[in-house]
Amino acid sequence: MRQFDNSTIRQLSHETTISHSPTETSKLAQDLASQIKPGSILALCGDLGSGKTTFTQSLAKALGITQRVTSPTFILMRQYPLPQSSGMFYHLDLYRIGSPEDIKSIDLEELIAEGTNIIVIEWPEKIETILPPHTLKIYFKTTSATTREITLSSL
Ligand SMILES: Nc1ncnc2c1ncn2[C@@H]1O[C@H](COP(=O)(O)OP(=O)(O)OP(=O)(O)O)[C@@H](O)[C@H]1O
Ligand SMILES: [Mg+2]
Image 1: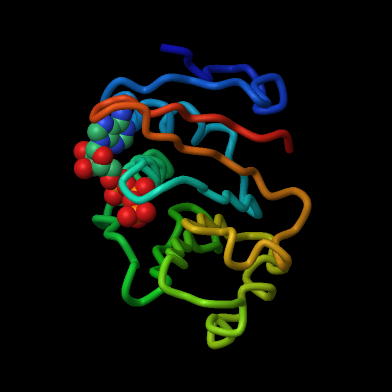
Image 2 (image 1 turned 45 degrees about the vertical axis):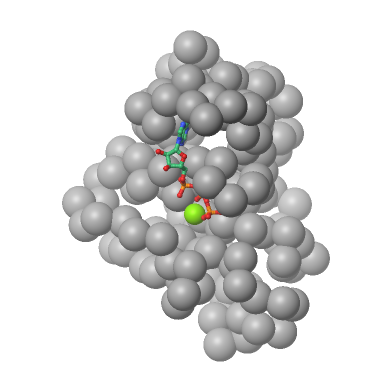
């Protein structure tokens, strides 16, 4: 399986990796973690059960978050302090919202503007218009019970 090691995300733009198991999806997240800087926004696109939360849990762990990261489906957003940083790791799941209006209780633009947070958004299509151009999009596609095609967009 393709590893991200020292190469840049840019070089991997539009490359598709095939993950054959949740463990491989976790490994991909770990490899990507070294490229994720404070201020990064990740938009995870893909159907139900395509691996977005699995990826997020491993990314959080690789970033040093020791709390268990659980899906925020019913509460829209969970937050975890980032170790050795003033920023937070925010995990949003917007599956249940209808329009950007539904998250006005969360000042997402402010969290983005702070520039110190890492923000991971499942179902980002719902708020596409407010995501900044530097958002890294990752596409998850279910191709069998155990395989997923994972593609990084350009930066
Ligand atoms: N290669 C794989 N990568 C990731 N998950 C896999 C893979 N193969 C099987 N799975 C299974 O698919 C499921 C993925 O669930 P997960 O909650 O991560 O998806 P999701 O994209 O967050 O879904 P939702 O849109 O409902 O939030 C898990 O049960 C996991 O065990
Ligand atoms: Mg999920």
